Length: 181
Image 1 (cartoon, rainbow, N blue to C red):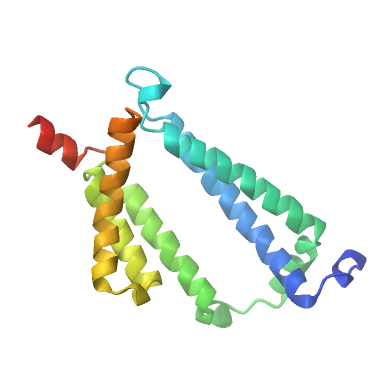
Image 2 (cartoon, helix red, strand yellow):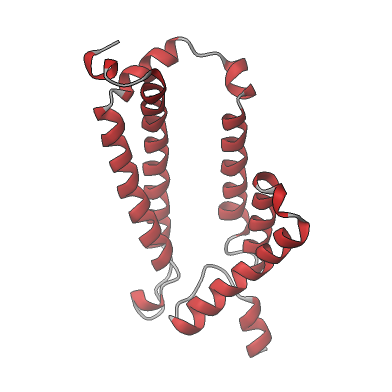
């Protein structure tokens, strides 16, 4: 073990190695979402851009990813990552519960981002995403609570952003359809 890593417990060193990977993923996703948000239309400037909020979130996420990488680097996370890659086992990797959870959230986020967003009204896309995510990760909440949260949260965001902040959200809106048609 290197000198900086000796000061850390094995668990802290292991977490630092995982943080290096997490930071790389967070930074990559943040940059990709930033580019996507910048390419969205701006009907009458940035105040009306549906990509403004995703851009702010993505920028913040990228900065947090950089901070996480710096912290992991200082804890010698790259050395742990190098060590763990030499001992890597595909079977144990896919049996790990954290790996399974990570694959689920990546899959659900990809479906939401690449398939639902912009093709389905925002509230419906958000409800489908929340329902599937809460079903996979939060079954203890009970079905009624999961369904209510999944339906009400996207409508709350639509009402907040459209009417309080006068900002568009990605995709059409069920509320616009009901009010203006």
